[in-house]
Image (cartoon, rainbow, N blue to C red; front, top):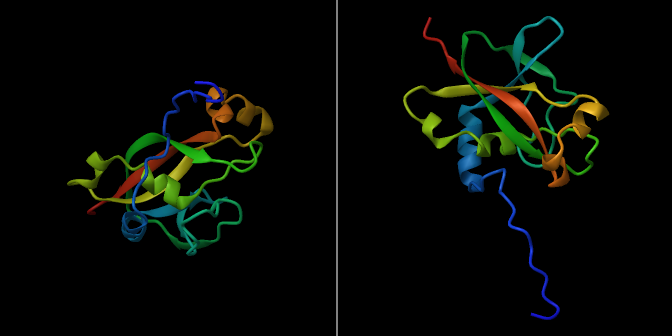
Length: 144
């Protein structure tokens, strides 16, 4: 096998989902951000592919009636390892299929992510593989 390099098997952290499926999910599951007033808001429409939505997110309407459903660890590709980048399509691709069922998820919020260079560098091996990770909360709409 002269001249052949064997690549170490790599885990796929962000599942491949058809773009059409991501677009359908984006109409159902919207990002929310908690602003200075400690209230959660849906944000003004932003591109769902390739562009980070967190820096400069602009509030739209208050996200009232959200009921916490679960937290999951989400993975996010980076261009620069020193900058966390949250892309809507990456979050939506990681919504477990089991959650598509009876409780309809309507929103997500990245509630924990590396904010400083020190926190980013503490992400270890995952950082070496081209990703950051975050904690993402998912919400359903309360019936009240």
